[in-house]
Length: 363
Image (tube, rainbow, N blue to C red; front, top):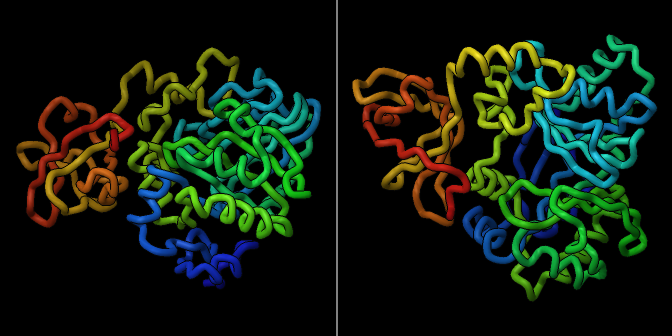
């Protein structure tokens, strides 16, 4: 097994005491102090994450919008300049190849952010479909050209203003803007993966450390903390956001995952449309639900979900202890016929009631 790759800010994180883990082939900071502290900082003040392991593709050319519109389930071609669009990308059978964010730079130019563990698979999928459809566009894997920082939390925009850029609050949610910041060209995106307000910032790797230091300095009296992947995962689960390989995967469709709002059936065509239309018409076999449990025992991924009679009707997809609620939370894929009845998780023979909950779970 090859050694994990290092992100551009590895030495920066080591200097601040990060504990590293191998995540998707990358040596990533999982925490600095504690996941509890970092999680609460994001909910109450702000957190700074390094997510430079994510992948970026540049799609450019006269047919770029048409290509992405056909490749993804959401509406892309009609997006105005400066808009960001979240969308699953499906296979022909309607299951999910990946979920990603498309940033419309112009009518012929798009930046696409993909999950770190799917970079090679996704790029091959992009190239295969572009060749199959014989469209006029160019696709480049520019993942090594970007570092990506996420500043998240109720104090995030104030911190960005104190660091020298006061216009972030003028960017609407799921919009983006290219600006000069501390001498570097960056793209500030009003997006995030925590359930809080904030921004994600694309920056050249050689300018990333200066930007991170500037944000830390600006946030030192605002409660800003460096945060790792541990808090990122607990935050997204509290918010009810999917993680590829868990709530969406090559075995789960967007409809089953509760992402039907992203599937634009009024488009002429997109990959997986026929299969998803059939599933919508015939009814979902399974559905992703979010839940809470009493007590302190966490139902981890793979834990069986059972009905009142003890029959297996699903499985847990993600599970953790909510730092804001102090109780276990999670998600599960459950047979739709069982959803109307009582559900339980089977923790090694102990049956705990699963209480379905609508995200966000930390109200």
